[in-house]
Structures are given as structure tokens and as C-alpha cells.
Image (cartoon, rainbow, N blue to C red; front, top):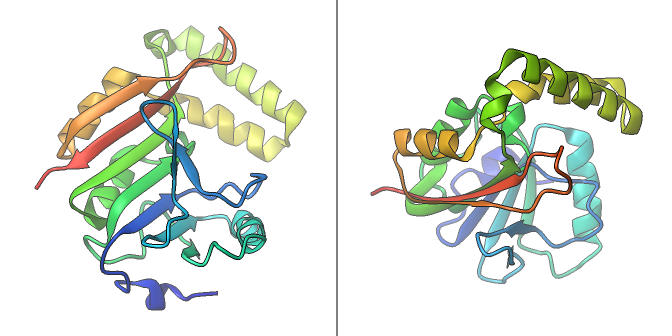
Length: 212
């Protein structure tokens, strides 16, 4: 409902920016796992929460879920590209990205996250973590085929191709530490969460601060 121009630079403090809106969620709450495995709940009256997703369908579903709870007055959704974010420099105190980085150009995304984040602001990223074995060509091919077949069975062929292509973009904890440091983030903390199965990569939760 709100235009990008109206949202651009409108919030002065306590702003939270979320990349990727899961319209399939069953809850109106916007949450992200932090390093202790608890949840940071973003439905506080002193926060403005801006959600960004490139998929209009998921934004529509996300809005329906949010609108079910009339206390979600501080949550606003925008359709846009996380690698060309429609926001002014240093607009947000916190930037969150959940289960999306493996579909993106990570250096471009981190550059944009740093641009829109205030000095001393915090980023939180949650995504699948890779293994060093994934760098082996034969292992990478096997994982791509497995990902394609799995998502073809449970979703559709478009999702299957997307997930298979994303395998090469899954990073290890060491990879993330290096690239976050490269882009000027400090106080980096990386937590590996329990995997649902030995064949499934353990999720990583990353937290870092934009240096002054």
C-alpha cells in the first residue's frame, strides 16, 4: 500500500529492515533466530519494521497474515530487489535476511546491507551452511541433483531449478566470517544450529555490527 517514495527516509530511529517475506508462515509475528536459539520479536511499538521481497505473491500473502493481527501497525511491506535496495543510506538500525542469501549475489547484497545500515547497526542472517566437501565437483553435482529431485517432488520445477542452481552459493562458517570482515563488519558471531538430518546442511545464524 505504501509507495517506495513515501517510505524512503521516513523513519528516523529504531528501524528494522527484513529481506525476504515468508508468505507461507502461519504467524503474523516477524521473528529471527538469534545466536542463543531464542527469538528476537519485532512487534514492539517503538520499532518500524520494513519487509522487502522481490516476489509480489509472497508479499501479498505476507500482508494478509500481518493484517490478521491488528497490533502489527508498525510493519510495512515493499516489493524490491535486495541487491538494489530502494532506501536511503543509513536508514536502518537492524537488517535481517532469512533463508535467502543462497539465491543472491552475496557481495552485492552485503554492500547494500551495509549502505542502508546505520553506523553501529546490526545485521542478522540465517541460512543453510555448507561443508568444505561441497567444493568437490562430484559432491556438488550430487547435491544439485538431490536438491532438484527433492524440490521437484515437494514443490514445482521452477523451485527445483532455483534450489539446484543455488547450491554453489551456499557458504561455510569460515567463508561467511571472511566475507563479512571484508565488507567492514565487526563483532562477528556465527552459530551452527542443529540439522534435521545428517544429509541436510546445518543452518547458520550470523550476527555482526557495521563498524563506525
